[in-house]
Structures are given as C-alpha cells and as structure tokens.
Length: 269
Image (cartoon, rainbow, N blue to C red; front, side, top):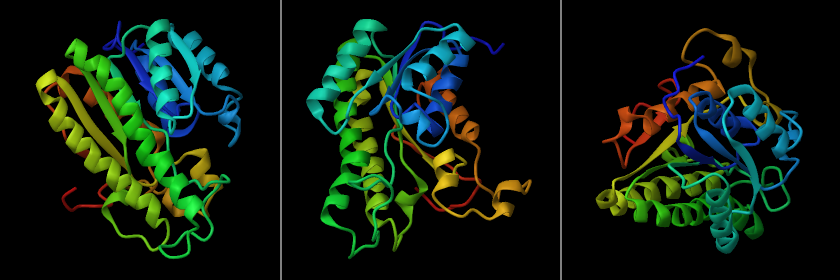
C-alpha cells in the first residue's frame, strides 16, 4: 500500500474514463485522494475497450483504493454546464483541492481525427471542434475551478497539454495550435493566481501508449518494445508526474511546463 500522501484531498480529473486521464485518477486515488471522474459520455470508457461506463470506473477505483470516488458527466465546451459541474462535484465531494484538465484530443466534429487534417484543408467545423475540445474546455474549466480556489486562497491546477504545442505539424496543425494556446493560457493563469497561493502548471506528454493511440495509427513495434527512452511512454509515466505537482514537493512551482517524452524534445518550452 502506498503512503497516503493525499488523504483528505479532493481532485477533479477531466476526461478520466480512459487513457491518461484514468491513469491519473487511479494514481491519485492510490495516494488517498477522493476523485471526481469526468467524461462527456457515460459509455466513453468502452470506446476503445478500456472499461464499461464512467460509473464502472468510479466503482472500481472506490473498491480498489477505499477512497470516495464519484462520476460526473458534462460537456466542458459549455461554460454554464461546466460551472454546474464544479458546483455538483463540490456538493457531493467537497471543495476541490486540485483540478487536472486532461480532456481533449485531435477529434473532429463527427468524432475521429479530422479529414483532411492539414493547415489548409481542415474543414471549419473541425477547426472549431478541435479548438473547443482542447482550448476552450480548458479555459472554461479553469475559470469555474479558480473561483472557489481564490476564495479559499489554496489549490492547484494542472493542464495536460502536449509536446505538439512546441513543434510545427503539417498535419494536426489545429491540434498543435490548440495545445500551444493551452500552454500560454496556463502561464497567464499562473501569474494571475499567484497572489492567491494557487499553483498552475502544465504537463506536456509526448506519444503515450493509450488504447486510443494504438487504435488510431500504425506504431512500429520497436517504439513499443525497446528498453530505452526512445519509445512510446506508458500512461503511468505521465500520471506519476502529476504527483509532484500536487504534493508538497510542488508547493513553490507554478507557471511551468514539464514535458514527459523521454528527451524527445530538448529545447526550451
């Protein structure tokens, strides 16, 4: 059993029915933290075979780690719905200590990757969907979460960006731009919330071995199986970094972006 470093703490992890979000939620639960599991669709975890429903995920974490876990559904691109989500979470679990904003992805208006997905050809509805899912959802959730943290003069916010934010991409250009916007918004929010004792940071994963990642592209076996840092990350290698930011080790760290990519990018963020 891990040391209960976060016993008595409460965290929201958006997009936590599967993938990186679920790994983060599970890791925080293992440290004694109560968790708000979030997704847009109740059956989202089943889409790539990572579970059944959001409620199933919440029940599994509660049973495994003995902490309070509740599931919530909300469309984070609607600011009013996002505000209601935070109020509902805090009514059921208590005031949030941490919010980890993981929801997003290079997902078009009809689901799946936009096609075409280049700088010029991507359809306007897909531009809007990608920006909504990644950038605007982050802004609206941060706003809703920050209001209570400002009143309490305590808290921590972590956005999940991407190494795509720091490199030009002919394909997935709008996704890269949306994640670059997340990074800059994170830094700006950190500056604004500094007087209120609220830390705001971003984690930027590189390629990470989720079921969706493996299902939506051809990944050479050597990128999965070699024993070096030149490979695709495991979800646990991302979730463990969250622990640094929400523990006492990160009390005086804010406005930072930490890549989790095995030295895939070695230039300033």
